Length: 349
Image (cartoon, rainbow, N blue to C red; front, side, top):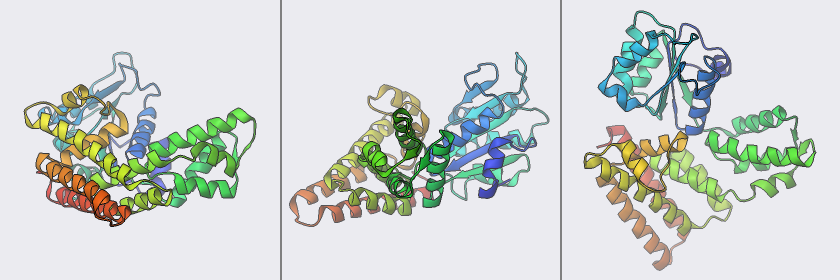
């Protein structure tokens, strides 16, 4: 069953009791994590409850595809319905999901955080076509969605937002729901402290004026995910705010270096999780970790080596050719994103 946009809010509040498993997927890691948590909490409010909440990594199910159906049918020792969280997950979990759909009985809710699945994904197809499963898409927020997010977050704290402040905030928020919420929380916490009931333009500028880091993160995510529309939007925002092209190129290099380090470890027989744990400065969990793992799968060693050479050349061109730095950087990002799209279309290899 595919959850349509108009059905999402109602489904998150009260999932259809016939649904055994939900695959939450899309290109917005923050929104995937947010909606997965909301679904899990419809079953168990305390997601740290060891008796009612089970966490499983997707690659574990590749070697044990019967486990998901077993967990679905197991009973909690302390009573109450159970929730099984599978994250991060990819095509390696498709067989386990098929076994879940065929399982004879059980009452647990399975929540699978599937990342940016293509229409040809076996995992996504199963979730969309089986009556006992659901597919919940999560894509980067549009301008209208961002406006709604800002206004609803402000209302929840008893605050209003002036129209010019709303326009300014929306222009500067990224497409990733998790990052947007983080920035909003910072702004609204600031407003709660001053006793005022309205967010003015001056408040927004004072708190969110430096959004360069958010913009660069959006460029990196869209570049290595191969999301051309999101990339164009992110680049426009970074450069319109005076972002430094060479700084952006170096941020791309750091990300590619991290991917190369972990991919090299995995190619030599190590586990992805072990490489991330041992390497310094890499994400340990949450949406950023999921995005990083997705990039590792899309960008194997050979492609990463080519990317690093292209990044190095772009920085050299910025310093020596006399061509506009912004044009050189934009061309680099588009070339890398096109490579990522090609890799995802063929299956990374």
